[in-house]
Each structure stands twice: as C-alpha cells, then as structure tokens.
Length: 345
Image (cartoon, rainbow, N blue to C red; front, side):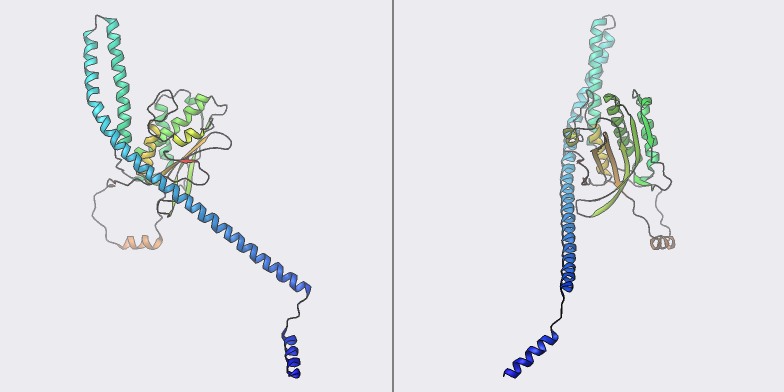
C-alpha cells in the first residue's frame, strides 16, 4: 500500500505544471485584460439598449402627440367653418355700411375698423383651416438647393425688413446631393416659415453677427416600431439669441407664439407637413449661441444593380403620367440624444 501511494505521488508530481512567478503574473494579466474587455462590452451593450429604449419611448410619445394634434385639427376645422360663415356676413354688411356713411367721415372710420378686424379674424380662420386640413402629397424628386431658392424668394417677397443685413451662407449646393421625394410646394411653405422665424429672431434681438447658414442634414433614428431609418433634409442655423427651455418645449404647439402679432400656427403647420411626409422636425440650441432647426425626410432607398437590371428587362407598364396623390399616415417625430425637442409638446 505504501508503495502504491509513493507511485501515485510521483505520477502527480510528474504531470503537475511547473509555473514560475512570471508565468503566474502573465496569466493574471491576461485574465484581467479579458475581464476588462468583457466589462467594456457589457457597458457598451447596456448603453446601446438604454439609447434604443429611449428612442423608442420618445418615438411612441411623438406618435401619440401627432394623433392628438390630428384630432385637435379636426375639431378646429369644424369651429373655423362655423366662424367663417357669419364672419363673411359681418364683412359684407360693414362694407355696405361704409359706403352708406360717405357723408359721415367719423362714423365711416368706425366701419373701416370693423372691416379691418374682420379681415384679421378671417386670416386667423385661414391659418386654422391650413393647420387642420388633410395634406395630400404630390411627391416628386426635388433637390435641397431648389427648395432653398424658392423659400428664400418667398421670404424676400414677404417684405421682411432688414433682409439685406443678414448674411446667408449656402452649403446646400452639392452636385452629389440626392434628390428628396417630397411635395415641393408644402415643404417650401415649411422651410420658408423656418427661415423667416430665424431672420426675425436675429433682427429683433439685434444680434451682432447676423448669419443664416443653410446646409444638408443627415441622421439615423428609430421609428415607433423600433426600426432604424436613414433621414436626409435641410439644416438651418442662425446666430440669434437662442430659445428658452419653455419655448423649446412648446414652440410647435398650436396657438403658441412669443411674438406680438401672429396666430401661433406657423410652426404647428410645419409639424403637420413633416408628419405627412413621414419625417420629423428637430430643434435645438447651439453651444455657441443661436438655434438650429432640421427638416428631415426618409431618405430614398437606393436601387441596387440587380433590381435595376431586372427592371430594365420587364415589360413597360401602361400607367398615367405623373405621381398619384398619396394619403400618408402621420409618423412620429423622434428626438436623438443631442436634441432637446422634436415636434409639439
């Protein structure tokens, strides 16, 4: 028995690894390296899950908000129609009264005030109807440069005072820029509103540097279903005073405005136009001062070579020329981690 124990001990010593202190140190260093990498991967995965969860939550909130705005639009449309009918009668009778008071200048001025007030109220009703109407898109390929040209021309024709004191920096004229599948007239209306607001903000604050920068914008964000999509559009940056947290939170709400005049429906209409395109509008303050607003649309899906070849072999289909009207559903406006606001609050 003692001989067997001695033989077992000798065999165990023979197969036992002969590790030095250096070998142990190297083994511990390798173990620590692997552990550190696993911890880093774990932290990255947790951060990614947290980011995706936040994006999905925000997208769902924006989708619910868009539905509430759509319901509000339907109610506002009904009220606006009810107001417009008697308003037309008031305007008609006020004009008739003005004509009858030709020989009484003092009373005629009162009739003129009624006509002016009715005209202003009619403009409010018109804005409400524009906000509440259902947008039927006539999408066609349009470049960012074309949209900016038309929007700037519209702002200039509005007679904005101080137009010549603003330096406009154009970075949107890139030959390689892909065309956007959008309704040009609607997006021009939205972009003109954004540009006009930026100019007025710089002029009212009398900013030392009045620079309006227009450039292409790209982004990737999750939709309400959690699917990531590529977005492309236009970024407008001004050197104005920026926006307070309260304004950032409420600026796209219907009837909210910080100006002395106006209905507060301009940015709400921008919101609706972007919803109709399945896009989003994102607003934020810049670190160096001023505000940046992005109009982002779903980027067109590139056609792969195999699909293009298959399409060229297919027989031509006899269809009417033009793009049919589309009644697209409202899509959420998402907020990325660097933005504090997107859409109405």
